[in-house]
Image (tube, rainbow, N blue to C red; front, side, top):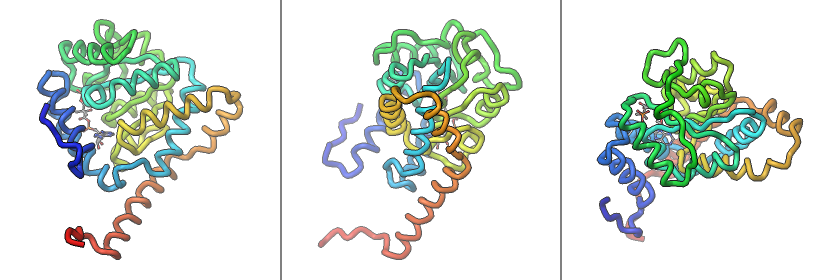
Length: 260
Ligand code: PTJ
């Protein structure tokens, strides 16, 4: 991996880019994953590369949904494995969720490599490799291949960096879909029950922290959090945050003051 000096003003962002490139070179990030990452970077810029208030509310609702579910599953693709394997494992442990590899550009080799990355990060069991034998109806992409003991029977599914089609198909099966997507305008964001518009690297630990805090809450309190959550409002608030940031830049100026 290229050595990025810690003092570089865009260290975090460049490091993430290197992790995705590394994952591609090792054969588990899809070529299109590099493009998807670039799109994500652009939206991350627009939200200020930090967790914004609507994303925190969505993370809270996501935690409540996971704690209320009987069979939660975290779906993992190439980019998520490259950027946040340990964070997936931590959330899975706290929320007693299963981990399943599910790929848009599925090859058995990539699925196996992603499972290995997750196991090295501490996952005890990873579904979706040899057991992706069930099919999600009405879905034609490779994402339709799921594990009968994972996504097929899940009642809540966390889907980071998803394509909209599967989100809609999972919703039609009656599952609660928790999307993590930096693009508030994507089909995934608009079709999910709960959309955390944040980088997967920040969203996962935020959800994990809420799960830790809310474990002791009773079910009616958790249900109250869920019923008061409105995803359409959260997405509108997200776009409003972006608009405010842009308005502020227009008002205050955009160029960097390098010499003061
Ligand atoms: O590993 P595979 O085969 O399943 O393929 C994965 C990709 C990501 C290539 C595939 O799912 C795909 O093509 O996804 P899309 O349709 O490009 O959607 C990815 C979404 O994730 C876009 O809306 C991006 O803005 C968003 N995104 C990119 N990077 C991040 C992100 N969201 C959260 N955190 C990120 N780091």
